[in-house]
Image (cartoon, rainbow, N blue to C red; front, top):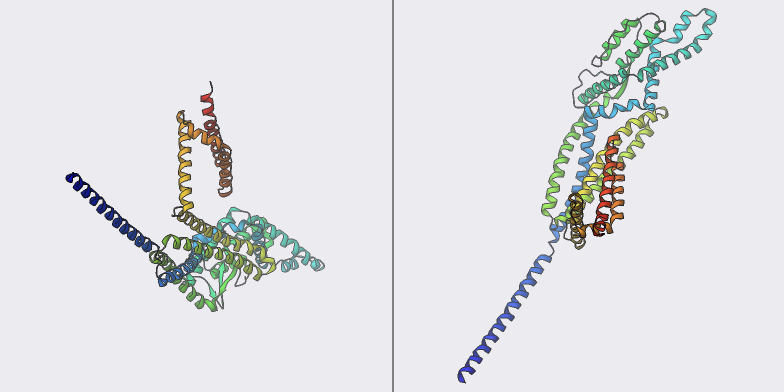
Length: 458
């Protein structure tokens, strides 16, 4: 009896001791949990948050400057890109009209039609010199138009632009080379183009030039003064010193422009390097890197949109500065460059949007987790349904889900096809392939949704 009482007392004491130990451990766990919660929710210091915000703003600005600088450097100072941009503009009717008028005026200056008719017409027929000059101008204009439509002009146009741009860039970078600088102007050479037109006019109607003329071969690499001298010898008459040339920019400001281009080159390189460093520094310093990445993408997108708007605005301003008769042609040329800016910034916007979407969808947000779970479940179901349709095995769960959502899936397939047509310049073969893919997708959906019912039917 005493033994039982002692045993009971020992058991009760042990239970009490264990109960106290449990309470103590729970208290310690609660304390640790509170400390952990406080550590994870403690806000970072104000200076760090302020520095991160300033870095995000500065990075967005520098990236915007770098984007504009790289595009300008590539399109304005890179000869291959320049030719790629301005080469096709000569096919535009407005550009051909403006260029044709200029070429016709230059050629008419060589012919000196009124003096020619006065010399060949009798004294009483002198009154016909002016109207016959107008008719001759129409003839020259038609020959110029024929030449502008030829493959020879397309080749010469690209080659002249290539040589002119190479020389202009060399001048801007400090090497004048053989680009003629006379007085206060820098001239660009289009003499080879006019020489070809004169040759075709002389071949079609030698009397227009006064006699049969064997015009020399003039290349785009020749110094303009030498080329003009060769044509003068062939024609037997003097030509204006600026024949077949137009002003690129004023030489009196050449040193200023060269200094600006040199500074611009250095600033573009510095902007690109600084943009990369600031992006990395912003993410390293930030206490909330995902949030900072989202802010950076928004800032960069806003900056790029601003660049796009400025490009469109500059296009309008430049067109307003030129003479009314040349505005259509200038609109085409400037529009080609602005179009290339819009294409480049569209890619940057797409990249920023993709990074923003990935960072947002992979985040720890409740809705993002739910979306990922649901997407994974739907993806698994669709994969299972497709596998069942291909292998002809039964997957009731997947087939029932596809059957319940068949109309939405079919509509989704059509919407995707429409987006592809809007975003991709597809060939006829591409359109046929897209149509086959959409048709196959719709057929698979119909087969998956209907197969379980057919399998269950007697």
